[in-house]
Image (cartoon, rainbow, N blue to C red; front, side, top):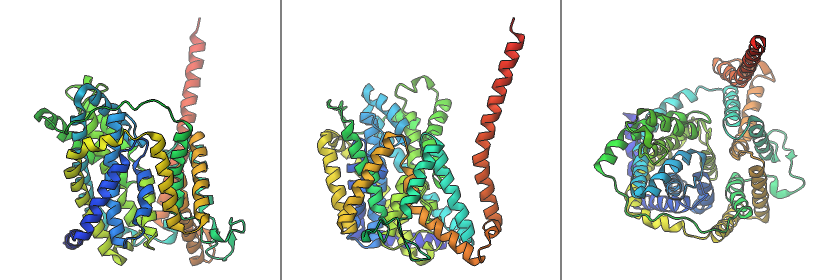
Amino acid sequence: MDTLNALLDGFQAAFTPTYLLFALLGVVMGTAVGVLPGIGPAMTVALLLPVTFALDPTGSIIMFAGIYYGAMYGGSTTSILLKTPGEASAVMTAIEGNKMARAGRAPQALATAAIGSFVAGTIATAALVLVAPIVVGFAISITPADYFALMLVAFAAVTMVLGASRIRGLASLGLGLLIGLIGIDITTGQDRLTFGVPGLLDGVDVVIVAVGIFAVGEALWIALHLRRKPVDLIEVGRPWMSKEDWQRSWKPWLRGAAIGFPFGAMPAGGAEIPTYLSFVTEKRLSKKPEEFGHGAIEGVAGPEAANNASAAGVLVPLLTLGLPTSATAAVLLAAFQQFGIQPGPLLLESQPALVWTLIASLFIGNTLLLVLNLPLAPVWAKLLKIPRPYLYAGILFFAAIGSYAADGTPIGLYTLFVMGLLGVVMRRYGLSVVPLIIGVILGPRAELQLRRALQLSDGDVSALVASPLSIILYSVLVLAVVAPLIWRWWSRSRQSQDRELVDTHAP
């Protein structure tokens, strides 16, 4: 009952004309930028983060809720019409949705993506309301040593799950941790890695790192590989669905939501795995499996619902534990931190009005998306005709303006473009940028929790594994690292034995 009353209070605040306007602006801007080719939700949120600097904390977070969901919807439009997913989780939507579009069913593909996003987003946000207070009650009892162990698990998870290889994921994480060390040491007061530059004493602004790595890095990378050929754009009418389309879509929407939310709530669970699982599930359950790969509507409805449910799921560890489990969540954490707000178990106690207004605005933003974007789909499709040289030049311009507004010094601009060049190099050598962002944000916090744990124990290292939770977390960490190695060794041994048996019985 307390949760319901708090949510109603959040709706009361979110329904004020000013905050409704912020939610509407966030939805429109998020969709308009997210629909552009090559720009995923993380890059959209990073690019638009400086826009909210002039707002109050609640208004800023409400606008970001709209930007967050709007960017997710905009990405599906690009995936369906251009087969250009802005992130890995939109790959299945791009494959199946673009087949539908080329078969003359673009309106149906866009409609099932929009309605599926609304259904899954609503279900997942409701689950967030139920799960968040439970997780907070558990998190309050966590010690600094437990937090340090939890962050190590998060580091290991993003390193192993994301990127082309574990070595590259570890290299990206190491770069992020190194950047996070820049500034004044929290205990000794000594400057670290500042190279005598006073502007770096306060550390590197996370907003500048995110905008540089995502927006500037992507723009420079596209500029290096820009293909001078016209965009093959599919004409879009008003999105609609027939009775048969509804019958084939509503179950995938529900199943996608059920698959996506738990994965989003797990550390580094991400949205890639649930979208693939949803696609496979729908193909196995479909009465027309032969249509998959040729434009099956279930192949759009299920993965898109799983993608959006996962997007809501990442807010569970972000708000309750202060752990970003995706690139977009990492940028959202930076949005909180720009106002001195630290997500974690005490956030619901220290800023309850902000949290519940944010959650209420998620419901509102999700509804606004459905109401606005179904009739506006042809308008968003026209944005895809913007020539890429103009598009990415504009991104560089607004990224520079936003970063200067965030920092207010030339050092911020220099850092922005250094981060952009780093993003290009990382893309060139196949390093995922997500572990870097996670390392920049969580690295200083992990160091803080480690030092607190050691100070409380007078330097006794064994205190790091003294609680049941820390023991469980370290056990999971060791198992996650060792189990694949053992499996690989066992598989090679079996293959070697099989070869020996073949050679023995060979004539």
